[in-house]
Image (cartoon, rainbow, N blue to C red; front, side, top):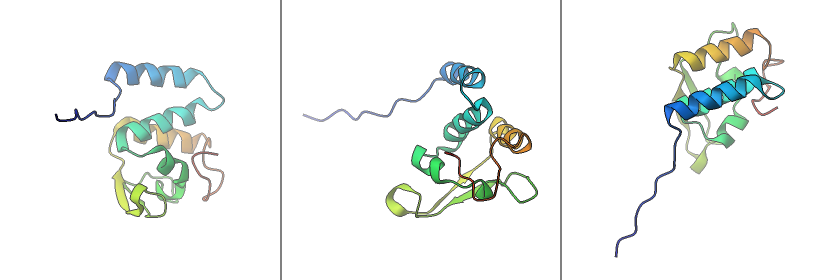
Length: 114
């Protein structure tokens, strides 16, 4: 008898849209919450990777968004370094918006989970 392989469930487009709408009007920092949702959904970042990711690795000092973010082996699952790509327009817009609103960037070492 063969075991059935179960895949992780993922959000349908309508569910993501609803989640973004709810996150944008609730919570203490809705801009940050929307950004975190876009980052996890469009890049495939795991929650633990996102929590340890520093903003300086996603933005140039000028505030421009990097197209490729390197994740060191210290923060990835399986201790294997990898790259993620910031290519989705709404994810980039959310990152730039939060940077300009100073929601996230208080210093270069600030991490996403704080």
